[in-house]
Length: 133
Image 1 (cartoon, rainbow, N blue to C red):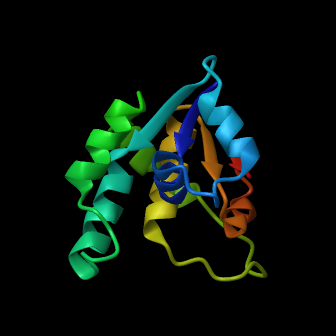
Image 2 (cartoon, rainbow, N blue to C red):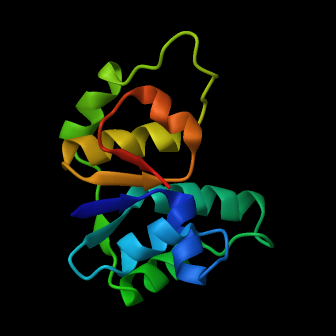
């Protein structure tokens, strides 16, 4: 299975954080799975680092850790950008404002990957390849 990690799952996996759900850990450690991280996550991390350098490493450090963990970097494609207009949530769903999550979902759909997340709000997008752990 090709798995794209949500930013927080990626960070928890790299730091062996206890917040990483066991199911996510098993999927990431399963050698049959290909694990990917996104250039979009690196943008998100760098922005958070600029705002709060004491709380977040810079994106170069994080990228190095990802490569050392044998995670594969995936860049943003034009095809993924084209999916964004079709990404909808029901009007009754709680508001979700994070543009990075939307971009990651589009990327996973475009690349036919499972998007691994812990954010329950993302299931409201109705995209079949979102795996909530």
